[in-house]
Image (cartoon, rainbow, N blue to C red; front, side, top):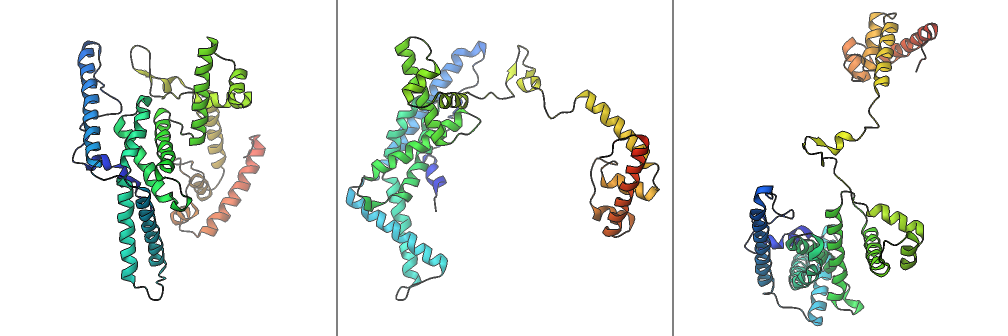
Length: 346
């Protein structure tokens, strides 16, 4: 079972906290405080560097693993997982005690922990490649650690390749996904994020070569895809804007205030609904008090809430079946009245 959260919080477990290091930087940059804001941001960057330094010092205490040690730890993890499966299923093999299986589980957990700790420096080296993404270094490391945990869980030592080669893909994927999720409100699949990033890189390269913005056909040719695919990726690449974004100089209006609600009724619909309600109430007045009361309760004409058969039956001290029968009779009577008065029945 993945304990990603535990290793994702490894940064917080080395005897220090972030103490205000924020992914959004200082928000005190008002017109009169530009210098103060700049100093605060500089201090935060310096503080983050210090924290990364402390973290590196802590994780460097665990020696790196050689290929043989990676195999030994992988075998211990595999044995522990199998022992855990047998215990969960209640299938203890003959000649093996429950205590022995529990020991294998414990050793498997220790092996996994050591395997992860010995490779935390790999995560830092990969995370440094993404420092210009806008995400703080500590967050990049934390996200990369979740990918490392996944790599340890999925590593197959029998294939013969080095763990670092295998883990690099998982760490990069975890970091790339986190960056993509930070940059946009609409979450995209990782493969789509990679395609969008590839298109952006090719577009920038074409701009440098052509000295102008390339046409979709040129981008498609460089990527080896169709123009339709380029247009699709372009739509996905568009940044989203929060409806809470202030509009105007006064700051009292948000973007959402200017966007029409397609689901909201128009003034004409509101008037028609009110008139229709009045006509329905007029039809209900032709029913006896009990039938009219049942219809008002069942269709939310009293308090705006449609009451269940059980609720209405309790109110009128009748059975649910009797309420249903009276409702059907009342509906038939209302249809007759509606046709007589020229009101289209629902």
